[in-house]
Length: 599
Image (tube, rainbow, N blue to C red; front, side, top):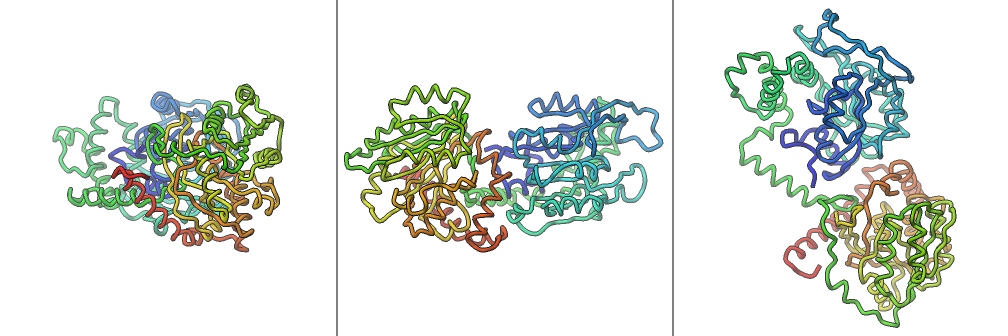
């Protein structure tokens, strides 16, 4: 599992916020406007090390070259950000210079982009937006449509100005001018330390533990250490860089002894380091406690991770070989098994669809009608379908109106007693068709079945498991927890609810269908077995669409069920009992697996 931070920067407010809303192993995308430095006191440095990627905007030429060298897998932009596109005569000078020290400045012409231009360059949904614009934060925020791009977390520099070498406060707050822009765009304040203000998208705010924390401006002058340290790093000659890093690192770890020669040589840095240590002590006291307490904290973290729900977490551990229990392969293929009609909607999935086809066809189910409805792919999908067409009930490739339309077209050719669909990047596990067919035969009163889910990456390696408890109809009214690739139902029920999926849905058509099944009085059964594998990859519809249309469609279904739009806290409370049962079943499964018992 990737850690979001290095050993010297764990348990920061940003870590806590991202862990709460994304999970500790999520590898997402960031946009850092005014990124300053790729490693020194950077919000995104540890994220980059743990596998995140993003866009860094830095107008200073020397700093931009550092990003090119140290962040080669990021998109690095040598530009400024403002309300209008154009060119800007940018004056490069050290942060450490006083206002009267203007002689050493160097002017460069840089391109000006809008905030929307920068956000559009992200390669995926933006999980973290950082804005440090040197006083121009309001212009930057006004230049972007936050509701359209909808980053999950936004960090904005809250200091209006900074004065060095003078007594008294070094900065004044400057968030009053732009705070309302975020609050009216669907964000809520989650944390403030006097330097930065952390905002979380309103629909995710309920995932955070506790109330917003605002430490204000009065804790300690070292609250402004970020800009001070950046300024000092610029002011010192290159020969002193290693000494500065050594002193800062030592103080961050709470050490009080320094090399006497270094202390004497750079007394100013030592004083700032002590201030930083005091700030760390005030903000994160657990880091500096005695080793036994640290061990207790480590145990607490392990317990917290052990009890964290895995439903919804798409990357739970490092990729490993896909493992299916051996007894899955021992199912009997009786001639009396019911006919199963399976449909695969497909579009531009040539690199995955062959594995999908083989996961179904190689099971040798005797009464299978398998049809593929392709939306007019231009990759090698059609060549693969032609290679397997003798084993298929049929296939067709023509433009359609989306996934739901393709599913309906495929089911028009279905004649099986049992029905289901499998997306062209997912898999059925060995023996699943025989197991499902046998279950329906032995339980004629059951209308719908589904099972547990394996999670795989783009290379087909396992990255997680979802262990579900028994079926809970009340929970289904609040969230769709049923793995679609494991779902099968009887044709009589399909005809009873209209014989089609709702084509107005692009994301939540399976949840809508399940709700209609439940409203029609269907009897559900959860099968305690892994039936399918859900593939997690960069081009995946679920990952790419959930922020754009997914929440809107899920809200639409909840309004239909409850007559209103419930808040996130109400949804979590309604699902609490179900999630506790899931955690218990997951723990029991892991215990049985560790003991070598049959899962």
